[in-house]
Length: 114
Image (cartoon, rainbow, N blue to C red; front, side, top):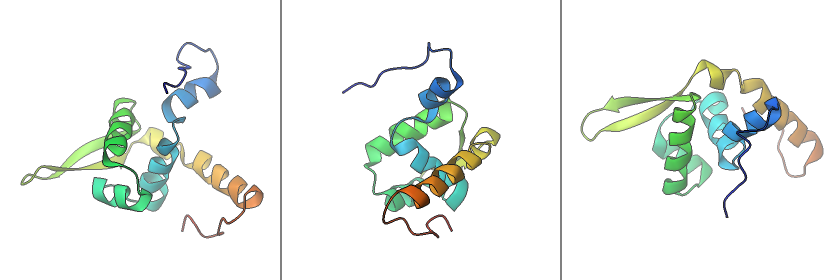
């Protein structure tokens, strides 16, 4: 199922959702910005996300300027994903979403982001 694009909507919320509105994207940003995971295998293991989905989401986050892809080894070539200032500016949104979830959803431990 293809999702609706918000790219032509003149609304900052819609424009933000165009970048970070896919289900896995906020969790990937949580792992990179709040938890400090930067390597593909670590993010994949932590989230339990399919590698193909993670590859797609990481590519989109790099393309949109939220993450920077850096090679950390030559043999074999391996990359890490570093939060950019734009991703760091998303930190309060992630924290607010976590706070809201702790208050209004069940089974959410208070220290989930620590």
